[in-house]
Length: 162
Length: 99
Image (cartoon, rainbow over all chains, first blue to last red; front, side, top):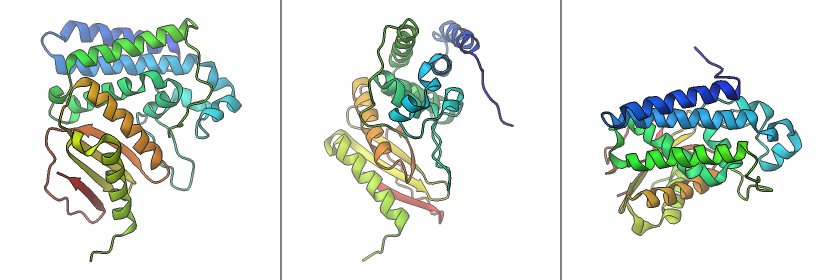
């Protein structure tokens, strides 16, 4: 089964708010699961930012940041990139965050790593729950500021990542 | 002398570049498990000082590793407390370990 994800910023933000509220309700008793909910709150917040980002309407500007970026990437759902065999490399959410929002990329990726540690490994042991919360808070703050037009985009990402 | 195949050489390069960027002294260990079937490299990183700031610094280093090998491998990474020294014997797997 495949899925196309939520297609509007409003739907993404509603999901982000629901995830954050769930995280806050369980964080005292189940911080590991709360970390996963904070990650998905962050994921949907970032997805909303992609959908609203006007850079995806301008192919020339988009590909000046990274030649692998395409307009449809605003709706990307998978986390990591893929090598496309003989075709072009496909970017994942993590890659696009690095290109478009480099100031919060390390925090977003750590949030993803923490959620993987909970879901597939031995839990949050190597990640601080305080860091999980602050990583989410920082990326949510940046996305709010971007939505309010308070953050200028770098002219060109120095080391475009794919 | 052991001849290195293309994928073993790539695996080794990913590991050595990551160690160089992160810094040998900051690492308790680092391992790359590369699966040539999907060209995916999983890097396990054991830090000497696994603080939050150090994690962010190391993730930034791994961005550079990803960038360096972007046309040859899909790289992912995780923090671990110890490196698993057990060898994965599957024919498609290549490994680099610093322990």
